[in-house]
Image 1 (cartoon, rainbow, N blue to C red):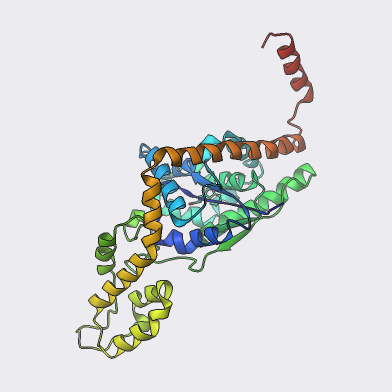
Image 2: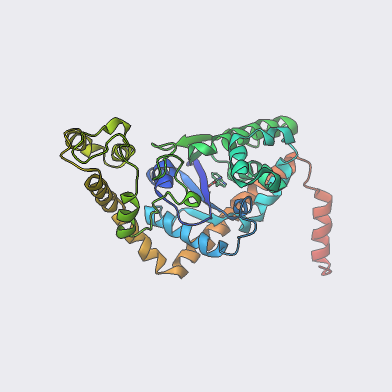
Length: 343
Ligand code: TRP
């Protein structure tokens, strides 16, 4: 049997370059080797978007187009978190295995809550890593390709595996591992914070070539280089870092021309933007093809959601059994009611 990958993203909008190098490339690379479950985490969006959840349906569609656009095959299992109620059931059980002090220590949740306003934080917000553990364990994942910010959640998941198996005396779950992409945290175009839609310092996979040119054009470069004729300092230039990530082969000539002041910062960024546009071209074309066939995209999600429910239900049977929540006499009584025609 193939090992399993479970991973996914919050559906807050379109995915960007940070997602690509942080996790999507790994997913594309491993999709044939593993059985993959890709979750679109709409419940998790409620953490900090409880008052602006009305575009959730549109955002789920956008994330699906991004997934298919980067080259994840439609045969994989794609599903919407809230449409697999088994996950919520498992979350409820897991929430009794984790102390409140433990969830409050999660560094990613702490960061997010500071951005959001700690006093506004709901119970669901502090507890979402437990719900994420349910997402992962319902499918008995072996591997989770994700960004570095997800590591505390994977650690939390591993703790739940140990606690569950010990508490109920059965090896229902096995320990999953995280897999971080080649760029664990991609800084946004401001060169200061991590790339993120909410900071508007991102390049979306779906941005047009012109938009990409415009955005890269605003990127910070070498702050020590005041005049065009001054030699540049690639090692302390933020734009050069992007060259190293997205076009490493071009680094030697970019360095030489920068240090000898034969290349200006503006033209350097324009050239970088064209490299990016070339690399994203295939993704954008494929994405546009799917985006123009919404029924097909929703069909892929419907198939995935059905399959996800079947797999999660099998796990839940084992979980309820281990927890003494199977109630065989109740199940028999329900069967009798069906036979008597009273149900
Ligand atoms: N926390 C992830 C994000 O912020 C989304 C997510 C939900 C997830 N459930 C998951 C990731 C399970 C990996 C595995 O985008």
